[in-house]
Image (cartoon, rainbow, N blue to C red; front, side):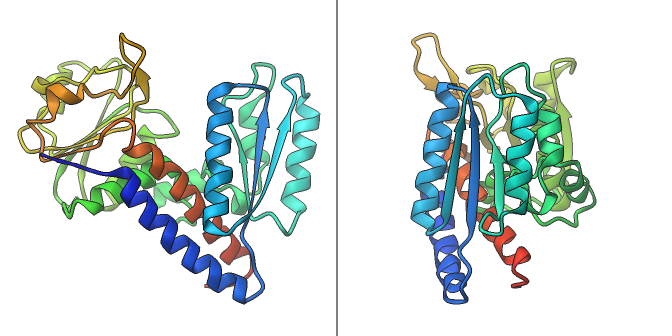
Length: 283
């Protein structure tokens, strides 16, 4: 069993982004990312800080808009409109979840698709579906980078994705399909779950249930990617996979923390770089 080091893979992605950013700067272009944070959600604040730090590491220009929880939909929409028009800003990211009185769908749909570096806009989601896209959603794209780092060829393999969310499960299955995996999606209504997951050469867990995946659900020699971020009975960070139970059965496994998490932000940097190139007509 080998542990896939998300921190190391993430570092190499950021290094290549920084090198490309330096080339763009020589042409007078600095990639710019704007992050909108509504309210005081502590987890969101941590994510936003990490994104600011990554922008710094990659040499990007960044703006943060920390706005109060009682901001109205009109005010939020007006901020998005302003950023859509700002040539210094190539990527716009609105940190979800939003306070309950705000409509996240309205905000996502309002972001210019070419500045939608989260790839949540329906135009970008449709482009991913047909395989002709500018941006990939950050977490599934990060998962693919981690799989590639193992040297395992996805083509022809059976991949099972646990979870059907719009942010991870659905786009994840599309990316695997684009690389010729045979993909099965499982969810809360799936019957004979262990039977399905234990047939997977590549198993991706994204269900939000701490230590749910046990050894009897994993095929001998499988690649196991844990997208979960949970807390166990002792309040310690863990994933959807019971790491200690599963680790001796698989060929590769991602730890939590230090697996998929660092990749998400690196892929966001990659998307922002792509956005800057497209908006400035640079191939």
